[in-house]
Length: 128
Image (cartoon, one colour):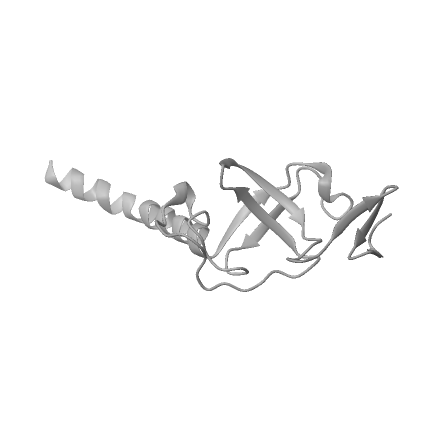
């Protein structure tokens, strides 16, 4: 009986190590996402698959599956730049993932007039 258990564990070890590696990579380094809405057309369309780096803006408790990290704020933080594609979950509803383009930074005045985007009273070059 012991031989069978040892053999079974020996055969299962590579699978368990593979699952552990995937879990660590998805938690710390990068995670795959699917674009859920048309908000990024024509750059990204519904159903596009992307891999996002988790290092870009630092880590928060929402970076890990199930909110495993029990701390507030961010560590190893760097500031996002206008035009970056950002992927995030709202703290009040972590079940839905958003894929959006960053158009405003703290202190910016964002406005839509006649279907055109204005950032700090200047028409955005990317807008229609």
